Image (cartoon, rainbow, N blue to C red; front, top):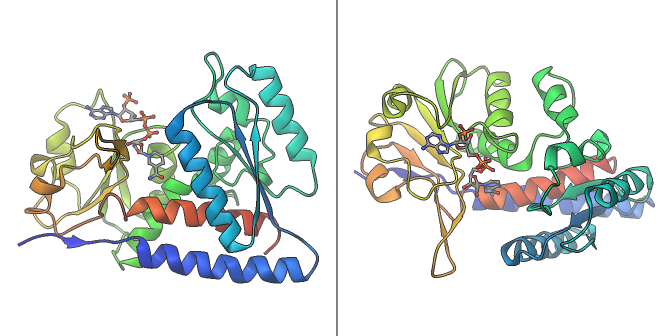
Length: 280
Ligand code: NDP
């Protein structure tokens, strides 16, 4: 039997509709929700992603400013611009797009984003607050993983979740969110021994590795729920997940598709966070 498909499309549409309603109410009350996306790269797939955020923001009634500093921007100039936007009362949400110029670190620069405006949870302060159970925006992708599980009524309390990946953007924040949801969490990475044995012991596997098709049927228990965070570009211009869907879907109980799973929910949550940062 083939695994159930855990689509993110309906959830994404619901979040977007709610966000548009809140944005309209805020605008009617005199606050125009505004998102600033700071870009310092000539990377084509990054430009495509930023355009897709701007388009989705426009549809939700959120003004989106693309602040392009150029691919040779210095870390100092990026930091200064983030500080300026953090102090600008008209701006409610700030995203620092990656990749960044050589020598610039996302974590270090994101410290200049006021955490109240850090709608993609990039400032290490946001992760610290998340770990401490204090209000903060989680990275949208990490939150999307938990929201997709909740949307499909997958119980997390007391369940064993194995997260493959420990980045600041996905693996670590998703582990904290899952802990906050009372799951028992194991975080795996490139130095984990016997990875397949560890992940096969879990009820839920979250794959956030950045390697197309790395998680195979050998990594999952029969009937397990598998969340594929991967967005690896393919030669034909498409996207491939971190999960080998062909092999895993014959063994797992449920699996998110790529595209159409975590991705659409991520974008919707960025907009939802922006409206919340604006007071909606
Ligand atoms: P990173 O490259 O920052 O992190 C990858 C993680 O995977 C690291 O912790 C690394 O371990 C671990 N890893 C790499 N190889 C292995 C291996 N063989 N076995 C076990 N663990 C391994 O990636 P990100 O976290 O930024 O992204 C992960 C995936 O999610 C990517 O495909 C990315 O495109 C996607 N993504 C999707 C988004 C969306 O909106 N849907 C948004 C952001 C990311 P170590 O720490 O030891 O090096």
